[in-house]
Length: 309
Length: 263
Image 1 (cartoon, rainbow over the protein chains, first blue to last red):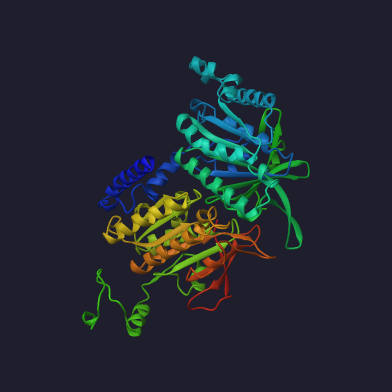
Image 2: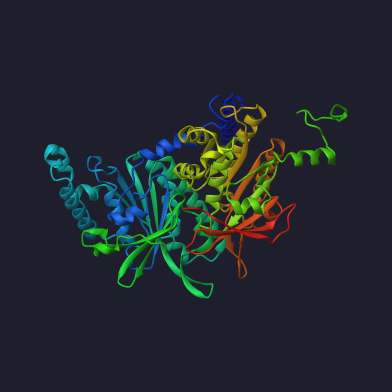
């Protein structure tokens, strides 16, 4: 009984504190904590984007993956979603001196597709590209050269392996505390977000509710901690308008849970990416390639044009 | 004649007669154009003040673009401030700036950069990520509207919630009806705000799979809530969208119109 009284007193105190703000005159604006679009525009222009490794792909994404937004990347198995995820986890760590964000990455692996040897290889590829691009820079800053080791890049990825949907829900709930303690994380990658929800879930309505809740939490994390959230998703075929079309798994109820959507697909022997949803960019597609160094531009130079699908 | 009528505490008359309402309507100050020609024509001029309009459509059909266009056009035409509640981090200031760029210069007589700053300062954006945060924001909004707090001298005339269905999706469905009752609470608060302070409220909804064709989310109880329901769809791979009236207090349902969303 005593605990309940204490709890009630705590709630009343908290509410009284909040009420002080409610009645007060707000000279700066209608809502406490809201921003106007002019301030947001200046902030947006200062934002750095996370490079994907391929300049064509960066082009259709408006410079790269945006922070403060949730980007969903969907594709058939084997097209290279995990490769792109790993590339982003490495590229976010490129130091600011070399044009990157200098942040860390959180990688949440649901399928076990994270191969450390490949990550090492991609880190080496990234470093060799930086050295090539900035040949004189690293001479000046000796500490900078020391930082460009593949081991440092590997150490900058916080890896979570989860094996069930309850663990997935738990880790996303835990992320808020984790990100509060590790403020240098600038990207959270979940590979793949819908894997554990496709089988084993009998109650589809419950699945929709849980996933909607998850996506709102991720949106909030990305906004609060100014990081990019990248969700990798499987693709299935849907029969509409008389033909089979590729759509993301979990369909319509999940489709509004991201800010941007990129779909990776095969065109003959080439990998292509198609920007399906974005609040500020037009739909566009471009080819790209996955090499031993990681994700790069497509090999043939005449594929530079960006065409509407 | 107004003085004879009984008033409530706030000073508003309890009832008005048809002639007053007709005079109000004739002055036509109660329509907020969205800036997208097809939608404006379909709605007979624009979004109506005092009413709740819903835009529903499948993913990437143009709902957020329609919201951004409405915000930009209403702010640009000096009609008042706009409050944009965003649930998916889709509010893009650079997109608003590009939309304003497209406006004809003769339309508003001021230099572009002055106009840009003025308009952008009238659009307030707040992110909400759960239903309780939405209740809190609406409560604060009501308090500040009651106290007649203005944003730089301009009263809020348009409230956009993009999208309200993502806030309601985690709570509706299932055995317990708290979710549905919260949805109806939000609906009542929004309609009360719209009516009392003469705002236009624009919300977006997504679609879910139904028997055969996709249908708007939020179920049967929500169908009665908005005054006006529009469905948008986009032709695959193009910029041309089609808007269809699902429900309207004045116009016939089923009418549709195509409009283009410039890249």
